[in-house]
Image (cartoon, rainbow, N blue to C red):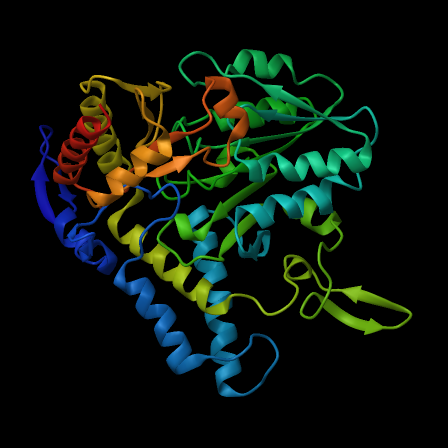
Length: 417
């Protein structure tokens, strides 16, 4: 950390970004005999050493199942797992008993769809989504709609890739029972005004669900201030292990929802005549959980909080502006969307090149970008393309990496010309 003094005379601490980057072991490796330039953090983030060490320490020193043993290891594992729940609750500014620990946003949205929506929807009801949704926030609603006779309505985007909020509010007609939307688009980086949308939904008696996968790693979250009913996050995008995530839900919803999966840990008593289920959130956590993963996710939250989410957001905003400006200067490059408020994500194509060919050639230069439809087919259809390349940054990226990416892109364009 270094100290800077602003004009008003208040001293602030600036993170030492080079030292922070050095804590990510994988970023030190080479690919195809070139330094790795990792520009795919919207897909999954890299992990700092503290997260890797926390998972390693759990398996080396504390490995046991949770809530099933009175021996020392069982008690330690349970304390670590429930400690992770409390740590995540503090990070999200909610209460621990409002958090269902799960494998990620996909599971969380399916849980809401099947446990909350399925018993409540009927023919003629509607579910309102947006054009920019990830498939994980489309397909579960389609499956539930097919089983209940409900229909899917879609809120569209404007030419810049911003949600047309007024048009979306106009679609919140009496038959709409649920609105579900991304806090941040994984393709365009668009930051949606979820607080305004959720408050308007609440005024109309509509349940709101927010996919926070792309928001939690980049924005400081205060979930109660959003006024939503459900909020889902994924751990592996926020420096945590894969197979971890959280569903936050209003307590009254959790208490009214039936279990989604049946098995051990989600019960109080089982008889062949019937079962008494555990209290929420435990009734939604059947089976042995990813204990080590949540120990690692708690360490990831500690790491992010140690830097400060405001500092992370400012760093990524500056890096994202630098990346976008550099791409805009390149001839033959098409950038998709120009939202007013966005994270450090840029989707693009090069004239005359398929996205997969472009990504493959960039990989040979050591540059990792994502290519494909990004689990967002309806958004690709909106832009009239089958796929794009996506460069997505995190706070551990550097200006030098962006410069090297642009140099590699220029070389690739020469090969494709």
